[in-house]
Image 1: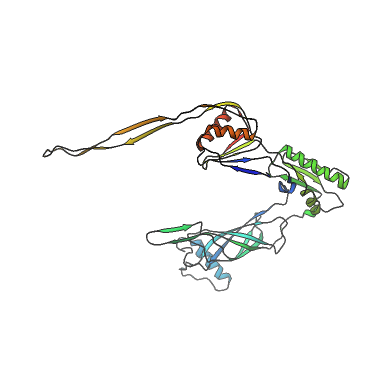
Image 2 (image 1 turned 90 degrees about the horizontal axis):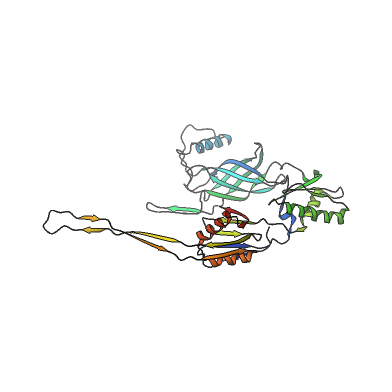
Length: 371
């Protein structure tokens, strides 16, 4: 967790975007940990979307859609038909959702819908009753409702236009929990706090801060760090686990940040953590530009001759070497590091190459993550 993030446009880097992450500052414990066992569960279902304006599946190319329609009609008491269906107002979809931790029966959840067949748009459709299953093949929720589609598609004989994705949709509060989520927090005797960003120093700081609180409140130390990711806290008998987690979740600590640089070569984005240091190093950065130009020339035969017009190739090659100088860069702190990189005046690809080179010689005292 970071409490202050400063964005700075680095001059001379063209489209390069460099983000400077300052010191983390104090944050609440509940914002940097997760309670073990209190996690979401993935749900999945198969259903049909009806009411489309001739933008549904073509049943010839999506036989599973036709089979689903016939099965639905049979369950509704209409009976099966041996004739092939011709409707284009129905689309087969997959429905996904997340079951919140400790969710009770009747809790409403959001659902996402994605087309499975060759439907061109789900706009205007309605999802009919769809059971949602968990990883154990049990039905935990059901979904139904009118779809909200952010994209659209339109076209004619010569041109088409598509905005966002018209074959994916969402139904806010379109699902309802039918089976309570497993687990009961109030039966727990110990709470295991899992760090979202595992770190030994942060785990020790959490345990020490909780013990400081529990000594003053309950006259005993109740927390101990298990490893870089887990902190185990015993629940006192005088308070419920739910209330106890609410109490310790409000405590403030300052998490430790790793020394790390993240580079995205596709967008030219460089993110540098506040703990990054660079040992004294000399850098030279320049470019060699080679341009190849084809200027074909036409050779015409003399008048009244039997010659033929021919095209003769002509190639011009130009070489230009950009001026480069040697610069000394040293980063005892983040600000000095950024100033040193600014003086190099490199382009996006150049700054990434410089950081990779500094890492190769062992002068970069941080992890370099290239995405």
